[in-house]
Image (cartoon, rainbow, N blue to C red):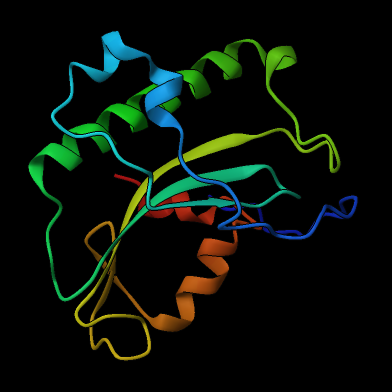
Length: 154
């Protein structure tokens, strides 16, 4: 399923993770916020500025589980972005683009990345959406140079 060839893209700006906080509550509005027991940040948003692919990632350590109220919130956010993706598939001229690389943004879904310990280096078991993967498989999947991560979509 993954795009196999590397494409040349215009250079984008330097990574600026952790420079901006989440403002989901302000964006969603009080009428929507009041319907949730929990609203919090998306733990990780992986975005490849050159391909335009992006995903939401919930990182779980020590074989933990997602709380039900958080899972409800994540499922709703995933549904919103999945529906937006469907809309942009039917209206491609309206799809947002990265202003520097001109890559069209494309949402590839929500993924649970779970470790049997605290990180990939000390975990005997690593799962991506409940599918066991090797540590060496993570960088190519999470770099989003291709859409190969869709093979792990739920």
